[in-house]
Length: 145
Length: 145
DNA sequence: GGCATATAATTAGCTTAGCTAAGCTATGTA
DNA sequence: TACATAGCTTAGCTAAGCTAATTATATGCC
Image (tube, rainbow over all chains, first blue to last red; front, side):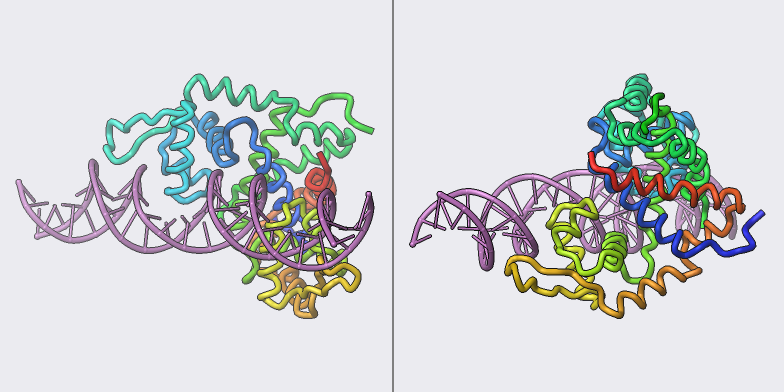
């Protein structure tokens, strides 16, 4: 079921600008040693188990070469490993290491993280509103064109 | 009034990842000829009138050199002009040109814009939830540390 | 079997956009 | 007048996206 009325262009601009700014603020302080792209990819690998690198790129909505670099960093950090596909010599599967679980747990519970600090300043109502909107934002981010 | 309960770290991670991905998708298709940073700055200049460049950088939460480059692009595009401060030879005020109003109006009403297309696919409930969360996202993005 | 095509990942190099450090010029103060 | 401060610019770094071209493997057709 889609909307019959067009969304307000002013709202769209606000969303666009707000998302851009929030991203900027978040990217300025990357949690620990990982970059933004690395955390995003690592979360996906943890969630979707051993996954072909191409499929990981598709899920992250990123071109293949970008994922090569991101995965390279994660491998250097010992957070994922590449398992060669026994049935396809071109392909390989990316899997998290135990260290990755530990690190993601640490990141998630990191109370000092900037965003958590800010979220903690929200009123319960604001927080509830934000959490309610999360699935919508995720859908906007995941949808194909 | 702040929350008595800590925000859920899982929610924080989801927000972080979702904002990152949405930004990525949005940045891939910049509306028209303007880049993401340029639109964001232009919106602020339009809203806050002639504004000192340093203050613009502060509002955008960006370092001064970044704003020099962003404003440079906007000037080349004829969307803003620099008015030298008569009282302070070091400083200058950034003001939008009529072309900027026209362009922003165009951008805002651009129905073909990717985000609008996606937003149009939301249910009315989802859309309402998103719009309700907008001020909260904006607050998260604007807050100082 | 052998060659053409297709696919997975990588490499090389470009762009946008953030940053810090250092520099220039104007201001203000001792 | 001399020195410190403030506003903006320049130079050069990093992260992270992209496209185009390469490499290596699979697959499909004669």
